[in-house]
Image (cartoon, rainbow, N blue to C red; front, side, top):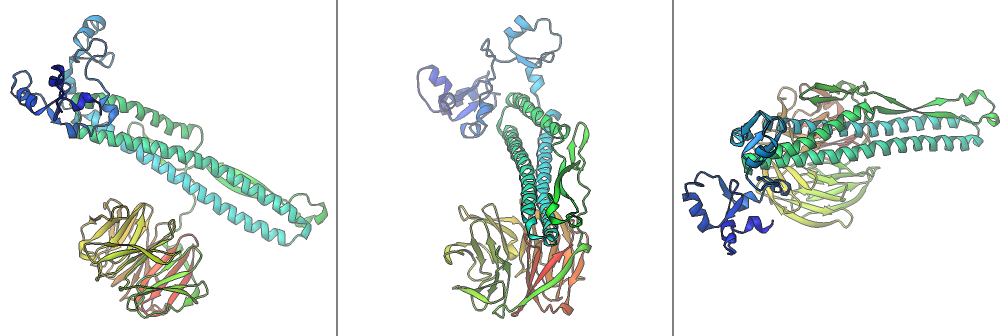
Length: 562
């Protein structure tokens, strides 16, 4: 920050270099302790509003650059011209606004600006823009996912057709698959570029929101009024950007299909093409909120979203877990299975065929685990004694760090460098991997020994009364489902690609599934499916597999389809 803010303006005028301790927005200068006393006692300035320099420095630099005096005449603004929508000094009025009729005292215009409808409207518009950008980004990401699913399905059909044709058609198949991948890659690149642009817009809106929050807390009324004018320009640009996405049909959903050339009806030597890749776009149905125009509607794909009633489970494998007190489970990206054994103080890693790959030994009992794919780290909790979380490097198999926490610690998940965990009576808590800080996120008693789950920007946990609860990453409650009538001693919890929540009942010997809105349930598995004290479960979202473990030496791997 320049010396204008750090040096006392009164002393500086006398060629005395004295640090300022407060800032007077009306005098537009800093004051030292001595000058602050005179400033407070003086009749002309005793009613001025002053703030600590440390607080004033929290205002964004671009806001501090907004002058509160006329740049042309170097006089304080006294009048606001509504016709030209600008503040004026006394000389401005005489020189250029003498014929303007709608002139008001600046004090009347800026009075209560922070609680004015314009200020509140700006807060709502920024929030609305942020939400709309987020909706579009998520929709574009879903389009990339559906393109991949389209490509996978068509690739299988192409290979089935190819198997019925003679070997010389291999060249035609390769050409067609290459065309398919090229089409998908081109569309993915286009959508990814749009998503990158949207993320930049989201960051801009977040910066505007942050600025507005700081203005609300620390800026003077005049600064707040002028800041709104600056932010309004950014808001208008982003609103036009959203409108351009609709007008330019950049929100059209891309689909890939192919046209079979009936190669089997022609003698293979005469066949020049196996099929044709077709790229199509369809309008989408995403609803963008708009406070002024009520709604801007974009048509979204009317594709079927699977419900809890569509779930079909197929048992693919039953494995022995090499332990008698299995408290959790997980699947690695390569299909290997992980089972922590609490009483033996061991973690068993099994190969895809169920045989033992290797064992990690611990000094303490192990409660729950979570594998961080990006860093190849395994996070391990210890339950009651000691109260800590350990981070294990799965490549070297060494413990890299141990973080002590303030409560018992059970289920745990990871998101953007933070570990969210079940702190039992302390509630839902969060630990930072950067500085090891431990804070309480939700003050509610959680079920002992139970896990927690994460999907998108939401957390799922089991309360002490066996109810399943969903909240966002800031701890704001989304929904809560009471389940005593159909699930007792709930322990395990996991979420699939569609936000459906799977919960295991340790005492009721069953697994239930709950829809994303948490308003009902469906029993998927029970004692007849050999569930005996199911302690935990894990959903592999990449391969649509559900792993369920009984407490004693038995686990079941299911394929999940809709």
